[in-house]
Length: 173
Image 1 (cartoon, one colour):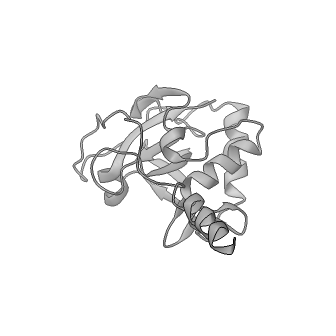
Image 2 (image 1 turned 90 degrees about the vertical axis):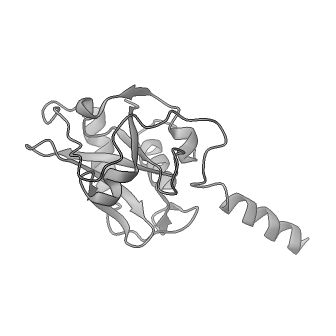
Image 3 (image 1 turned 45 degrees about the vertical axis):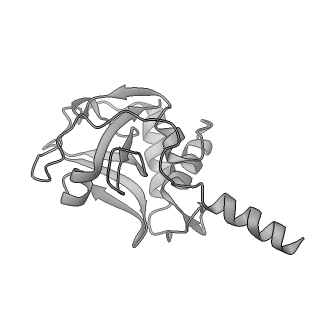
C-alpha cells in the first residue's frame, strides 16, 4: 500500500510543468536573443489585471518547489494557478493547459496581468509560464515567475535566456 501511494505521489509530481501532450502553437517570434521584445501597452491596465499582479507580488522570494502550488514553494504553473484562483479565476494546473486558455495576443499588445509562455527545453513546446508584471516606458516586458534556481522572481523578456525561449502570450482577463 505504501508503494502504491509513493507511485501515485511521484506520478502527480511529474505532470506539473511537463512538455505538451497536445500541440501548442509554434513561436512566431524570432529566436535570436538580440531581438528586443517590447510592448506598446505601458498604459491602461484593468482592475482585475492589477489584482493579479498584486497577488503575484506577495509571493516574490518564495522558493521553487517542483509541483508546488503554495506559499511553501511554487513551480511555474503552480504560481500562476494559485494567483488566479485567489482572484476567483480558475486556470488548469499545467502550463501546457494554461497555454490554451484565454486569447492569443501579439507581443506589442502585452499588458500587465497577461501570461507569457516559454519553451525552456528546446523545440516549440510550452514548458514554462509567467505573469506579466510591468511594461516599462521603453516597452520592456517584465514578468513574475517561479525560477528553478531563484524561486519566485521578476525577470525581463529582454534577458537572453527568456528572449530565446519566448513562445507567445495570452490574455486571460
